[in-house]
Length: 333
Image (tube, rainbow, N blue to C red; front, side, top):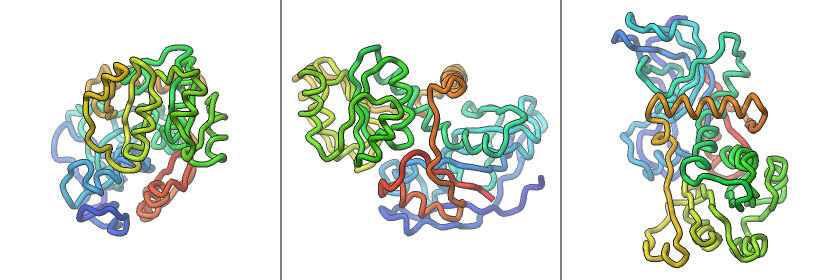
């Protein structure tokens, strides 16, 4: 498959709170220039909240900024020194600028997973949909708070992409999951994924949690909402519990006094997946856990909708507006 001189991408030329500035633009395609280069023709890419954080300036980046953090596709060119990959290999990976027709990595890149030769287009879509969110959902209850059988665990946005997988995986560890979502319909999704208790986001969460746990509070709260949920999350945690903050869907959590942790000897941690899979050993460990969980049907991902790459602005509008459940995927021409 020849690499065209230019490629279509979804990018933003400046920081913006609104998706309106997102462009479906044309830029130069990457080419093999070094002996260890790998060029991947992307087929599908996953839509994630982290791209909105870059667009809004929550996380630092340079503009123009090409969006995307995960994709799956086919290797179409390799450098002379590449031995672990060949043209035609099907792969999934985590890297920046994945919302593009082509992506250049090297054979030294840690976060690439080679897929079986018989992987279909649907299989590529599945891996593009689950790699980032699946690994996030698996590393959180292992690294940020090690979930034990019988633990009461609070999961916010339980019907979202990470929330669904986190509910499935945490339940499989024996946790008693208290799921929070914005509607009864979304709570039924959480129930199907193993949640034992269901709470609407507009309820008095700390009071309901106290009732469920007989005043003990949860061992951990996995919170991807951020600003709007922080206080309720904090109040719901029991003595020596942990608040795991891993998202900013409603905005960044304001500064708070560390002295507040001493009221119940609490812990708070902020987790980013990329810091959990920096080495090949870490990447292999967690992708193997993910693959085992998928093959044993412990977890799965629901693809809510597939959009063409040209409609990424609409996809992120739907995601940020909390109009979706499960995963959004882009199909790349």
